[in-house]
Amino acid sequence: MTIRNELKDTTDLANLEYSVEEMRQMGDEVLARALEHIATLASQPACGDLDVDDYCRTLREVAPENGTALEPLLDGLFDEWIPKSFTTAGPGYLAYIPGGGLYPAALADLIQNTTNRFTGIWRGAPALVQLEVNALDWIRDWMTFPESTRGLFTTGGSMATFNAILCARERHLGAEIRPGTIYTSAQAHHSVAKSAKLAGVMPDRVRQIEVDGQYRMRLDALQAAIDIDRRAGLKPFMVVSSAGTTNTGAVDPFDAIADVCADAGLWHHADGAYGGFFYMCPELRPLMQGMHRADSLTLDPHKGLFLPYGTGALLVRDGTVLHEAHAATGEYMPAMPDDCYDPSQHGPDLSRGFPGLRIWLTVKLYGAAKLRAAVAEKRQLAVAAADAIAQVPGVVIDAPPQLSLFAFHIEWAGSTTEEQNAATTELMNRVTARGKVMLTGCTTGGRVIARVCVLSFRTRQANIDACVRHVTEEAAKILAAQQAEARS
Ligand SMILES: *Cc1c(COP(=O)(O)O)cnc(C)c1O
Image 1 (tube, rainbow, N blue to C red):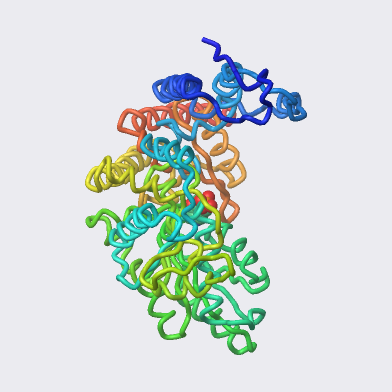
Image 2: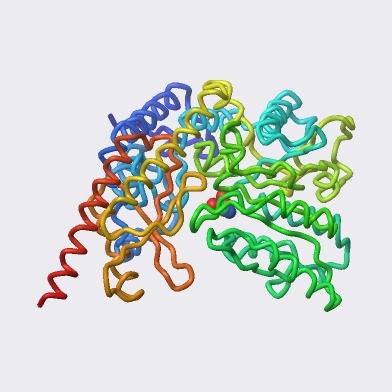
């Protein structure tokens, strides 16, 4: 059914309000498409058609002077443009770091966008801000951070890390930021160096510390780098560790890093954008021993808590530092009670939506136990997949799952690294081309490794079975072709 668009031909040009009936019809239309999309996710190719650069150029257009009906726009979105993307919401998305997009968060977005309340300041919406504080406190408790902690919802992990670096800089460097140096592992996410630059710490002040055989930051190398910088008159002020790297899922030795930081008076930030939420499950905490000792922690609810993109979170152990880093006043700003939380006094944004509602509504609807069960299942699936893939002839596991990500390559007698790299790339491409699961790799130390990361709530046993089967079959074909070539 085409929805009549009353707005476009009305003589009251300045009226932008739809009638209730129109809004209901439009909402129904959108919901029908969205639900159809979700219901068919498993049969959509795990990686859409992305070879569409020429096609995209044909989409360029100037802003329309007059409005159109909704339906053709939804046709374009759901039939044409959304399918030309990684199917990040689908169960076969084992590439990069998956997320999924829980439905309650979509409902929360509808509520926040239709009510459009101002949550930048406590006074603007005290009860709503309190719900957001509750959600941050829940996360604080799951991560076993102390009561002194203050948090902030951000748009993602990168912005959480940016704010953490800002806090560390304010606490340890004050106005003299140029001598300050940051330490992170050579496997750390690129957002660390990028966030450092945004926070005024230039690339020549960011040290990438060597890793051990399990891709974890080496303590001796960290200590040595700190000493060298101190002797050179620089001011080491921060270590950024990883709670699961994007390349291989490596978890840095938090306890030891926390000790180094305590001794040397450095700020310890943990990047838990991928792995942080595994800490929710008490039985998995030993895998991340000491993470709770960090001065600050990046989390990405849009990864490990399965929310749709656009939700990151930061915890800062000494909440006053987060407040001091962002405190600002204006003559038009209302005063607020000392014991209340003003989001705009704890983060860069003033006008903002109600990001906490996504988490609040999701946790209220499911309950924490169900979310923990889903998180724990993702690790079990990854462990089982790694065990099975390790048995595939030719496969060598480069990184077993520390959390829910593992990495491997293929090789055969007499093969060079170059040949192995080409074969591993081909293996990922062939598996992905079969449409059931999408894999991506990375290059580390000159070696291409294929990765499997299980973190979508929609990924269940059947998807893992398909992954194992397709890797097994495609690896066998690649090795058979190598053998045939060797014989000829
Ligand atoms: C995804 C990721 C980031 C960046 O987070 P965004 O939400 O994409 O900004 C940082 N670190 C790690 C380990 C990640 O996986």
